[in-house]
Length: 269
Image (cartoon, rainbow, N blue to C red; front, side, top):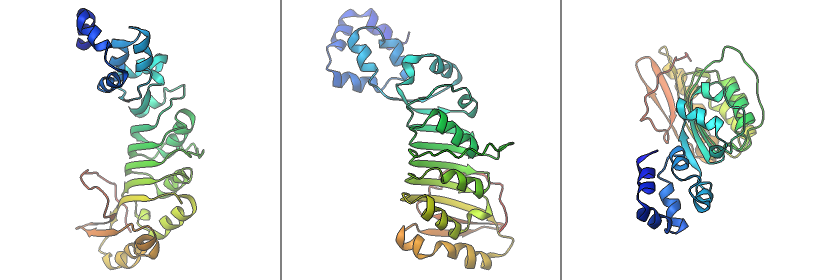
């Protein structure tokens, strides 16, 4: 039992004053609780509290001890709209959650599609720190219609598998990605993908890098110029710049946040 719960239970007058607060104030107070502590402190105290705490929707970082409670506690499942999980925890799900936001440390495109379609069909926001190359492809390409916002901090897989995954997200509004694969630095293939499969996309932030091996003029004439067409500059107003380093070259949208430092296995153009 936590400190706040002990205080309520040991001080009757204080508890009575708290219970006299209007529902609107109680709900505001409950927002400061972790979902686990909220239920431990107030569940089954009275019918009013039982009803109110079940109106709360919570964001949860699932550490191992708490994750075990989540998958075994029916009371908590419907209260959670956002989860921060490891990939190993995802594999233990055997039920659906009314989840809206999901953050993962790492996953593959196939695993993501399979996981979201089977367990989180209403998911709208997805953030994965690392997309890796799986040992075995499972080729899952079910529709993820509800998915609207995607952030992939680092993509270590090939463009073809990213393309297959994105084609399942026809309602996508916002996409933020970074990659060291040279094939990503082609504005034409992106234009074709967005025009055919991502027609609702309004926000696209990216940082694509690769080794240049001294072929800088070729890069500017082919790769960078492919992001300077009417599609990029006028139709969507996704403005891009490039940076030339000693061994690498990057194309990025001016809206991309470079505060995070990431490490790529670069390819060559």
